[in-house]
Image 1: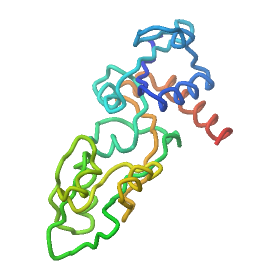
Image 2: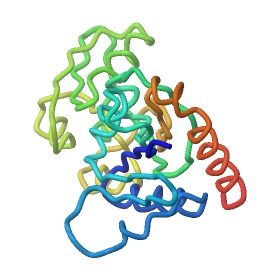
Image 3: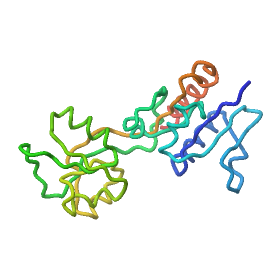
Length: 211
């Protein structure tokens, strides 16, 4: 049987996901050894794990380098990869939200300036509201934009809200809840359906017992 190739997001989320997969019956002792390796195999379980940048997981899965992987719902909404979304892992929970300076009052009569690195999500959200916007795409430190007058609001991921509060910003609207999702390559799901369905079933059962 072919190996099941699994793309894991580097960082805390990936560690949590790995723990879930291992408890669900897909262990890989080699991944816990010290070193800088990126690919780890368990010949007995026929599973191959590799660490990638969180925002790249969906690309590896869509292109078939990975059969399955774990990506945040924010990445899936923003880049809309051609994959199957199989399971909400209910971890890495946060939300996409609109935030602004605490004294902000929207004026519907003028174009709203929106700073974000999630341009697609922001555009879809405001299109659904019929609001005319000007998107300012930024790659980091989004909170600076309204403080320095570059934008009226920001659209960004909010976890605890600490960064917003420390910069005198506040959430004014929730856009969409975010959590980690198990995704699959479409061809892999067809040809490795049995093993992928098994990992989905085992993972879902484990989540039900622990959450």
